[in-house]
Image 1 (tube, helix red, strand yellow):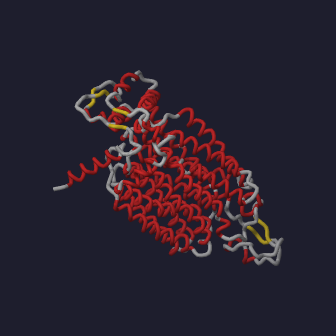
Image 2 (cartoon, helix red, strand yellow):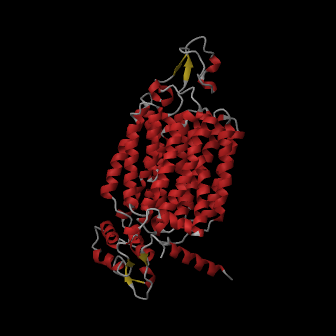
Length: 526
């Protein structure tokens, strides 16, 4: 048995009971078989509702990820003196940098943006993009340091609570930043907290339900992200003219109350508890889900055939999950392929919404169009996920995203360029959704959270580079749209080397995954 996998499934000829006391075949004495017989075969509405509530964490994830589109935007300005040439107006795409003091003024109050409040209009692209890049850098570092904790000592629920709480607290502190450097530091801390929000939420919600509901619950996370993204321009529009600090407060307070509810009202993943050797807690979590039914004894009987090493998690290294991923060649190949594809998708996924200001369209309207593109993306993912292969569909949408991004360079007409940008973002969203579901099925429970966290870190790495490319793209569109297109097409091709997973059950240990691979190889051998 590999390190960090304390559960020893017992394969024997005896029969066990499901959640209703019915006899089950011998294979149900594995973790997956036993859990599927209860959480899927006897799935209650309370389980699904808990899973959907967990998915709402993506609402606050989206708001903090794209909030800089409004808070860090360069406001429109106008000339106030004859010395300011009318050709230098902001409508032509120039900046007031270099104009005599007093010859121009911002159209909005200076406190509406960090650029106008701290006079950053003449700063370089690295300085203006520093807060956004600091946020994504925090996501990257926070994910590398914290992602394994959800697989080892903390679990999915505790990790989600701490992440949401840290994200809300740092967002609130951002509102009192006295200067750009403090602002960037708070954004970095917010990124560290946010790093594991989406991962912990997605893994916890999908492990709370069976295979029949897994794909639907995954889609609810994507809808939640869309809801958060779509609510952001609405909140920003309602607070137009107010300080950019107000926007951070309005997005941090709901997140704080959500984190409190997570701590007191949500159960830990029974699947993770079993893998960590904590069978009694797993049974208690399932009893809590079934509080309205008198199944307590039946639930206990369902797990009586599992041999669990009760306090095995005491000696678990917090990096044991990562060690398992690196030691197994097949796991490392899968991890690298998904991360490379994730990097390309992240560059477009985070870069496109930040880049809408370079199209010369209304900022609120442009961000709304991008947010609305997430909705059909989630719908088409829901429609396709049970009907098409993960591998081919992910490659196809990544390629389409790159093609539309390159079209943004070739097309100069405003409306058509905006349409190409939205199409590229829509394709990247769909590819990202499919890749996340794909990753859930590629890795067993004992390393699943770490693997998905590494994928998201690769996506975030693309987000770290995106703000700099966006600022440079204000001068040359190919530096932003062109690079986005070339990179996402190239990186998306790496998905082609991954095995197909559509319709398969989730594995819980590395050995179980390897056994399934050997069985598939044998069945395919003539």
